[in-house]
Amino acid sequence: MHSFAYKNGSLHCENVNLADIASATGTPVFVYSKKTIADDLAEFRAAFAPLDAHVAFAVKACSSKAILNLMAQQGAGFDIVSGGELWRVINAGGDPTLCTYAGVAKTEPEIRYALEQNIYCFNCESENELREINRIAGEMGVKAPVSVRVNPHVDAHTHKYITTGTNENKFGVDITRIEEVYATIAAEMPHLHIKGLQMHIGSQLTEVQPFVDAAVKVLPIVKKFMKLYGIEFWSIGGGIGIVYDGCLESGKPEWWAAHPELITIRSYAEALIPILKPLGIKILLEPGRRLVGNAAAMLTTCIYEKKGEAKTFKMIDAGMNDIIRPALYEGYHEIWPVQEHCGDEIVADIVGPICESGDFQAQNRRIADVQPGEVLAEMSAGAYGFSMSSTYNSRPLAAEVLVDGDKWSIIRRRQTLEQMVQDECLPE
Ligand code: LLP
Image (cartoon, rainbow, N blue to C red; front, side):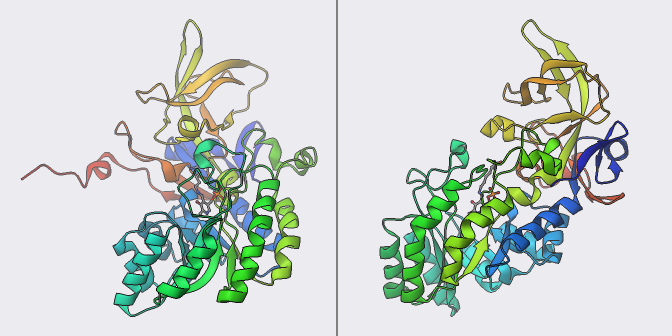
């Protein structure tokens, strides 16, 4: 349950009026609710309490220092995909021994760094990667903890760019070959310690069934590997979807009661626990989006309106460089005026300042007829929002704010123009 709601005609995050933040920091700015993140992490833990389950937050969803620090303070582990993410976790006060390291193209310096930091496990995606880790561990005189990501060939029913668990995807080792690969590790790679098995079938799944199908399919393999190799964990990945359409209403329990078909942390746990519990194995969960997605909104200001022949455009001061999800995945984010409107709706495209036709945040959207100068909140912006932002069109990175009750703090200052170009130089 998130913490954005209108109070006295103005949109608030927890007890802070978003208008106050926008006027103090300027826009665009990402505003996160500490309560939402802490509550959702606690909900994961409570829902999976019948198992020996551990949450490894998928850092890619939101890698800002204060958010990682918040996760670390609450005792979460981390699912990382680069040496940079490992560095960020450590820099934010996270424990490297609670990190699992995924990704299809880990480089030698990254592997060495992760071994030096004594990470919990490498989640490997190919035999050649396993051979490389084996070689490097041998040189360093250590045993590298590994698991392999099994690709169970289950359709996640999500956008084609974020489905990962079919044999058309670059991820993991096909389920038909996984036993052979583990046998090869055991026979030929003395510097590896087989520690677990991993899977992840995709992101933004709104139904429980594909998770169940994947778990049922992989279960016999886990049982076999527990016997053969004594594996100690099974990571069932991340992927639980959030509400993008109906976002504000979904802050209320009644809304969820009216939408029983949508996945919740509880329905996910209730479906999986009966399958997993009899194994008695440690379960790792790698949620990213579900922990931070609904916990933030991006505030942006309407700059101009343009009425064209076919469409009305509302131009805003945030672009696809700030949130790329609509352009890249046809992602849908609700957009609400910070000052509540009454009944003056129009249909418009909400577009940014970037010189690309793909630079929109919403198309043909029924929205309040906001006027230039008004602040808008783009909802569900916490996951893959700031973390995928760039300086395209020489637009400095946005600011970030963390709300805690009736207080708020800047957790990232807006990038300055000098900072944006500080590493550039002329040739000698
Ligand atoms: N574990 C692995 C191995 C992953 O590849 C991912 C996400 C996660 C966990 C976390 O998945 P989540 O719980 O956040 O769904 N940029 C896209 C999403 C890319 C997801 C990549 N992998 C978007 O904005 O929709």
